[in-house]
Image 1: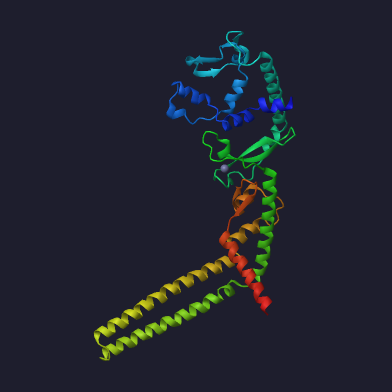
Image 2: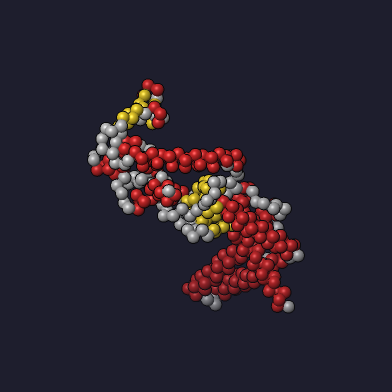
Amino acid sequence: MNNFESNFTDSGVIQRHLTETGAVTPAQRKCQLGLWDEKKYKETGWPRSGIANILRDPTYTGCRVYRKRKKALYQGIVNRTCPRDEWKILPDMHEAIISQELFDTVQELMDRNKKERDEALAKTQKERDSFDNIFSGMVYCADCGRPMRFIWVPKHGKKKNYPHFVCSGYINQKKRTCESRHQVRYSELHDLVAAVLSMQIKLAGFAEKKLKSKAAAAVGKEFDERIKALSEQTEQNAGKRTRLYEGYAEGLLDADEYQYAKKVYDEEAEKLRDELESVKAERDKQVRLCSSDNAWLSAAREYKERKEPDGKMVRSLVEKVLVHEDGQLEIVLRFEEERQVISQIISEDGEHHAGR
Ligand SMILES: [Zn+2]
């Protein structure tokens, strides 16, 4: 019975089977018969709710069902499905496709499944209502790029529901962008992010201690040497241009020779100016990144004492999380540049010590 149950009463299993075997959907059939606009409905897949409706429809046992839907435009109700106990069912009106016995068994199983589902949902109602998804808006499918949807699903063999993330590009059957669920447990993602952030905060604390013993000015030292060299070259260039003009004025050079040499010196002067500017800008940036004003260090400092991550902490340190098909999680951290500069300084520092 178990096998029967899972195969014939689970609209999800039936839906997959019908889709995989390429069965003509109700929408496609209506298009074939010319009842529906082909352009609009041709691609419509097998809807889960539609399959459940078919399983519950006594018409297939040879009945005729009246008053299933109500149209009451004056009440603002356009086309509404009536409660089942209001339906008028006339038996033996046409040939049955399925037996009454099978139909009754299916109803029984579906009722039982629904009851179990409702009970499981009721059990976790409070928990679900108060649950704080700290990754809200941050989890994406690594394959189709769509956001992962936060949903509650029962764990295999258990009646309790647990929070999960599932690719919204898979769930959306009308505009499906993904071929698999990419399902991942919320707790798994939570534990991994908590571990990564705790490591990041430790690393930032270590880096900050290191930086304290190394003044920001010292960081700019190698740049200062380059700036000094470039400034000297600029002075030399200016001297050359002055002497060139003097030579021309004294008649040692003719106009063509002067113009040619001047052009060469001018170009050199321009190149030096550009280089000097960019080295100065780079030095300022490095000094800023290496100081305790470094945005990563500042952000990490704020959460030094925190044991468990919350939404604010996650948003301030994590850019996004990507879920791969094999269940691998990729955590993209914020402050990439700031982290790189700091780790470079620390490793360079280590090398200096090792070299001594
Ligand atoms: Zn996807």
